Length: 225
Image (cartoon, rainbow, N blue to C red; front, side, top):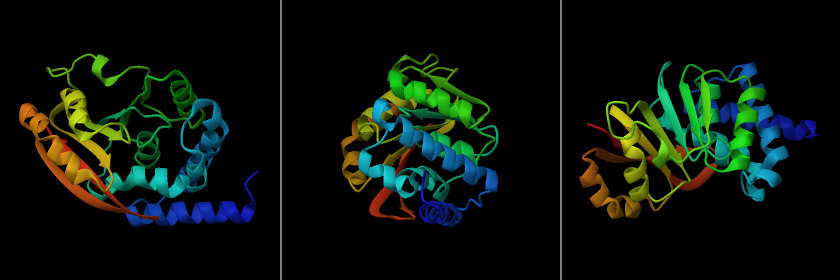
C-alpha cells in the first residue's frame, strides 16, 4: 500500500502537472493513472518496464513527459495514433487516458512488455486500443495509400535518423511523426539530414517544458507532405 500522505502528493503532482499542460483531469482519469501506476510497479521486475529509480518519479518522468505533446497539439477524437516501441505504454496510454476519443495502436515486439500492455488495456477498460506484437518495419501498408496513422509517436526508442527511416512510411499524407528527444536533439537532427532529404518531409524541433523535469526536452516533428 502507498502511504496516504505519499498518495496525496502523487495525485497533487499529477493533477497540477496535467493542468499546466492543458488537461483538467476527472476523478475517473486520476483513478486510471493511479491504477496504471500500480500495475507498472507490480509488473516492473518481471517485464523490465522502467528503471527502478523511475518508479518513484513516474508522474514527471513518464506520465507528464508523455503528455508534453499537448504543448504542441492535442489529438482530436478519431485521430489514429501509433505508439512505436511502446514498452510500458509511454506515451500512448497517458494520452489515451487524457484523450479517450483517439484510436490508439500500441506496438511492442518484446513478449513481456506486450503481455503487460494487453493486461493494462483490459484492466483500465481502454476502448479502441490495439496491442500488436510487431516491429514497425513489419507493419503492412508501409509507404503506400494504406499508410493510415495521423500521428506516429516514438519515445526513448532510437536515434532520429533511424526513426525517420523506419517510421515515416507509416504516416498518412499530412500526418506527423513525433520523436520525444532530450538535450541532444539538435545533434540528432543534423545527423538525420540524409534521411530527411530522402523522405521529403518537413522537420521542426519544438523544445517543451515538462512539469517536474528540469532537463531539456524537445519534440521533433516530421510531417509528410
